Image 1 (cartoon, rainbow over the protein chains, first blue to last red):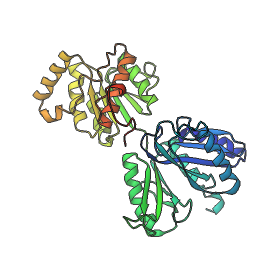
Image 2 (image 1 turned 45 degrees about the horizontal axis):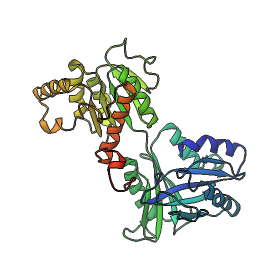
Image 3 (image 1 turned 90 degrees about the vertical axis):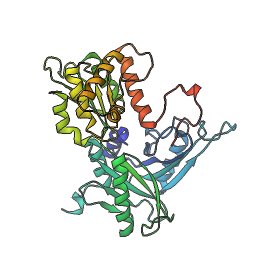
Image 4 (image 1 turned 90 degrees about the horizontal axis):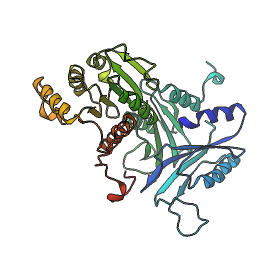
Length: 104
Length: 267
């Protein structure tokens, strides 16, 4: 969270809507520990990361949805197999993210 | 204070992270009140609520435990905080103050180690009794440079050290490092290493035993300090020291991943 605070400050000053995604659980091999955080603002700008770059693109889509409908949810990403378009972790682990609007 | 002046929970969390004050944030992620939050700080009343007073009380207790060990994770409870039930999932995130590294001895290895330790997030204190060497100019990466005897610094701060903290004795001068190691052994620091050749180490061990240190206590001292990487420069040595700290914490032998088996990220 620490590394995204200055971006969050700037976005809040600009009055931007923001969604926060946090790693809350990992199974097997996962690149980042619980607590790793990524924030997305209403323009799709990103701060931080929740994996080694494997799932961030999909997280942006989910985060924009959170901003749009004020929803909170757990999103799970697992192993990505041969399907080149599947979103997943190449390391074979599973990560559970909690996404919510930064409205608290 | 009016509601308007009340800082948001996020502002409390943000400010605590910035000032490195210990804080845990509990969030309802499944079941219960969606997104319910509780902010837990040692010696403060909790802020917010998870939607149930009994649940709040149980989570405060568990969050203080997570905070002490610097860990974050999901815990499951019944609607009123009952154990062994899975109605509500709470993510407890710890924002623990950074671990501390105390480095004794103001030498070139100290400058390199303080730089590497900062990369890993340590709060670094360099301590040496010689004012000519223990200067902020020589150790710009250290958070604090203390001119004093190591054992006297440890008398002041030793009680605060815990399993996440490290003490590195780089003086390799028996006059300084014997009392430093003796004082360091009285702390709960998770890592204690002392620099020196095998000959220096043997000599220091003899002196420590003469001073009444037990063989069991001596087992705790990582000396000669560092992993067997073949490090030569101060920077390489610093990497071998922090590598040893990580390996000791995770209970590994630190071979190359190629030559070992099993999950890379073991829980």
